[in-house]
Amino acid sequence: MRNDRHDERLSDEELELFLQYLHRFAQYEVDQFALMEVGDPEYPVYVTLSRALEPGTDRAAYRRP
Image (cartoon, rainbow, N blue to C red; front, side):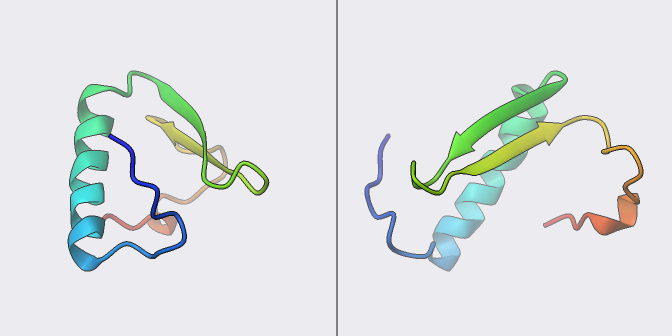
């Protein structure tokens, strides 16, 4: 599955699907952590998914969509 519309924001429906898939991915695929590099190769975004809070981070800093 590839979508080359990288220069467009997600629609409301796409954002809802993304969040649903993210929840499923976190539930079934993330054992301890997952590290990814996504986005524009010249200006990548580094994503860390983890089952542990970053040391010194207050849990209230996170929102649950």
